[in-house]
Structure formats: structure tokens, C-alpha cells
Image (cartoon, rainbow, N blue to C red; front, side):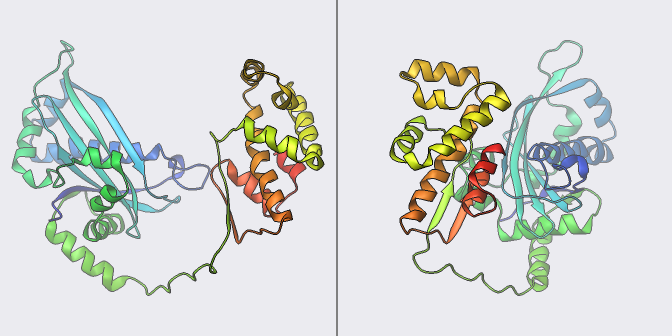
Length: 333
């Protein structure tokens, strides 16, 4: 059973992106807020005339919020926001969000737990009557996934997240995004119709060509991979690469007024840690140099990669290993 959702379309604009690129991860919380405010100040007042007046007397505190990023949205693309409710108490409710891109791909999932507080007394207030009646009269928007709950599934990821985005739900999200209809409650029948439309309209795509057998991948890690022990071992084992360390030292002194070589030459943990605390940026040079030195050594010994992957800051090292620029330029970058 798919269940029903409060469905809200949204288009990603410049302020949602990183300089005309894909949406910023914090935009996931904007998706949540757009869905929440549309429900509270558009759909709900249309169903209960006193709902707005009740909400005006309350402060809506977000006791907890969470989002898990699953995909990107580019500037100008549209998404469908699908919202359910769970874990309602006398003064709180958790709003659950699935966001699907216009091509049917999941973008993110997450939740907000809302606490109602009286504006005058600053005390926790009873659940507002109009909103409570709305949820009671639309029991179909109660989250269908239980044991574990939607919120627990968001944190657990992988298999649990896949179960949150069935083919029918992805097709429904795609329909909400592309139709740009008024916010509304959509249910099982709409989901069934949406998946039929999506299947009929889906282009035939050839499967990607497989990588050659026994492919070799070099993977360059990003922030958090600083390892002074590994770097010192490379410094000692590769005297022919000392020019890299010397140039890193020159770059560091020019940019930050602190040398890089003292990290390598420190005679105690305390001396090393004190130097790094004085200039935390020095670890960037180490994170870059370590995979580059390992890759150059492996390639020199005949092990050449079929693919080079860089995660986050590791992309700089991956580009260098792939020949986009030399090591000295990489240190400057």
C-alpha cells in the first residue's frame, strides 16, 4: 500500500543552488518548510476557517529536524514534495517528507517534529483544534511505514530508504513535479495511475557499458583523511619526491606564514599537534600529497588505474593524478 500524501510542487531557483549549479543541501530544509507552510497556511485554512486564527496564537517550534540527501536538482528543475504525518501526541506532530525530482529520481527524505507553544504563556499548548480535526479526517496521510518508523528509516539509510521510495511513490512525485498543479492530497489511485504513465513515457535507455574485467580504481579521499604517519613514511621512503615537500613548505609559508615541513619533522606528538593547531590549513596540503605520492609510486611500478575517483577535496588529487595539472600546481590550488 502506497498511502496518501500532501503533495506540493516546487521549482528550484538561483537562491536554492550553489552559483547556478545544483541545489545546496540546506535547500532540503526549504523543501520541508515549503511543504509545511503550504499545509498549515494554504490547505488547512481552506478546510477549517478558524485554523489560521488558532495558529496565530501559537509558536511552532521545530524540536528536531533531519534530512538525508539522495540526489541533486539543477537550477530550474522541478520537484514534487510528498508529505505525511506520524507520531502525533497531545502537543506535537512529526511531518515526514519525501522529495522526488521531475524525472522520478529521489532527491531527499527527512522530517520535522513540531511542538505547539502558547505565545502568551510560553507553555506547551494543546494540539490546535482545526489542525487536529484535519489530520483526523484525513487519516490517509498518516505515514504507512511503521516498525521502524519513517524517522528511524531516514537515519538507517540504504535498504530502509529504498523502501520509502517505491516505484509508485517515485512516479507520483514525478507527476506532482511536472504537472505543477495546486497543492493537494493525492492517494493510492493517483500513485497507480502515475506509475502507468511513467512506464509508458520512459525512454528506452541502453545499459551502461561494463568496465573491463579486473579494472583498477584509484580513490582519493577528502576532508578527514589527514594521516601524518602515512605522510612521514612516504617522505622517508621516497627521497626522490622531496621537491614536492619543499614546494609545499614554500606554498604554506607564502599563504599562511607557517611552514609545512615542521609537521613532518616534529619529534613528538605534542610538537606536531601544536604546529597544526597554529595553522589547521596545513592538513590540506597533506591530504592532497598523500594520494598523489601513493599513485605516482604505484604507476611507476606498473599498476595503472582504469578510473580515478576523488571524493570532495580528493577531487583535486584525482585531477592531478589524471594529468589535468602537475603536482606543483596542485599544491598551489
